[in-house]
Image (cartoon, rainbow, N blue to C red; front, top):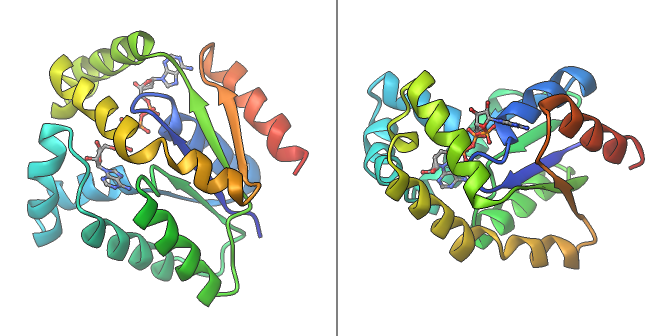
Length: 190
Ligand code: B4P
């Protein structure tokens, strides 16, 4: 079984790359952002709760996110492995994920951070905001708040996974296919 955590700042290419990796390695792709957006679209209780945080560019509280993620894994068993896209984003989420997987005799194989600079990311996100209509992609101030959330709460995960010898970083700048080659050559060596 191969379980990959993809992290990186908003717009770094997590969702984009996860789709390629899902197909190449036959894994189940779980994007917490996508699951929240599905719940918002379908006006569920969880969607209502998450919306106010996401619209501002804040992280959704851990308790909601962790139980949602666990539920997604439990709904999709019997797979070759998982790509966790955008989860964990806090230390509490990382610890919860380790504990949850251990109970199932599973573990994270590797975590990969996609690196890109803020100015490139802002261009990508504002562009997606125009094409896709996501509210959190349409306002530069909200995008910068998402970067701040990342710097404050997510970037420390690097140390958490380095301590477990499971951290890698990959340059996320370049053509999508080029970034994908960098990721697959890393994963193929694991
Ligand atoms: P996400 O849905 O995870 O959104 P994201 O960080 O913007 O990244 P995404 O994966 O969608 O975009 P990608 O980089 O692929 O999170 C949204 C919100 O949900 C969060 O702000 C938070 O509120 C909430 N949330 C989610 N998970 C949470 C958690 N665990 N805890 C708490 N809250 C949580 O792509 C961006 C754009 O760049 C695309 O348009 C793409 O086409 C383009 N792009 C990608 N690669 C490129 C490349 N190489 N070159 C040029 N463009 C590229």
